[in-house]
Image (cartoon, rainbow, N blue to C red; front, side, top):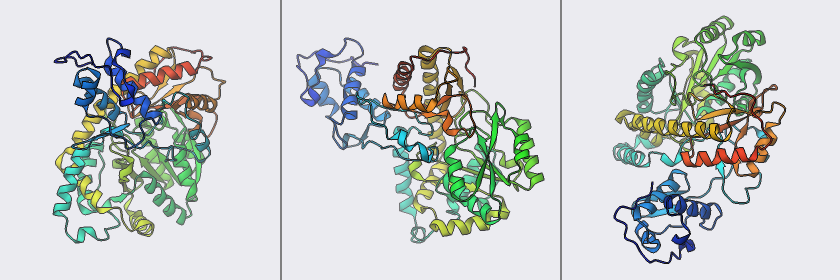
Length: 490
């Protein structure tokens, strides 16, 4: 939306800043024009990290346009994570993140992530698992941190409890109970550095008991399988269908534990059906096996009712884990693990040997946000924003890739697009897209056995306009694709 109210026409010839010429802008859509000019300058490193952008009033006067146009352009850049604005410090260009391995990226696929950037310098990272970092609640976090530091005792600044601060564990008991249906107590929770540490701790304990075989979903997170293998477990691929992991196949494979994503299966997005949940817990009870429940993005749902955690139905057989990586930011490295009580002492021993304890100050800040309701407010705003972005991606797919089969649209922060040509190589498609500035993950990365080719597309990190542009570029890069059927599936 352009802001022209109160604008005074000016004969300004333009701005020395980037040699911006308002005469080159279209008569309508000048906010889009200015945003595109600034975005290109940042991505092409003509505006390197740390560069301070002109004050909105000054740039508006130079260009002879309404200040609101500049304000909105700066806001869009901030939403895209390209700039940061602070009171009295103005707007500056953020350092650009480089590709790095995370829990969803296989070891042998890093070469694809280091493919050269596109010639026009414009990139769109649609990797799944990227949350909306541009809307991290900075002001709320800073307020809570000031309050925490003002009230913290000297003891709070020492080595913490390996299980985590009592304040955070108490607040998590309440929040997990009302938001996820988890049944727990303060004494059951262990604060961890994200789900990755939960998997590491559980794998070490399982390995120590000689329980080396662990079922994993197929398709399922390749990064999680790699993590478990690193700690000495043998992943046993178990097929997933439209009702979730197949318990009949799991029982035949006979592992001693299994990792599942029941609320929103990664990457296919299905929910573990009620009868499968019952069968899973019956199998775990009969086999005396451990179910590891990764509740990685259950907070985001759009077109279906909430699904409670499996943990509440079998406290003795389920280890429940989640984190703030998708709701706030991976950089916080804050998560929780609720293991069966019989394993808790060994988990705490492994935790202490690993890092003594998780950072105390950030735990107290999160506890403050939970207690004040600020965390819930942030989640509500984020959920609304992500639904808009999900809708934008679906609309763009219908427009630019009509007839494409899309899976997992009802919840989460990503969806799966099946490629129309069943004979194509989705890794090669992802490489071609990467060369054209689109970062995606091929579905085959997460498949242990052959399956249909596809792309896993995240939509959380971009504005609707950027998502539409990215999907259009995907369509341009797939000229040989021919749709097989016109269907969208949740």
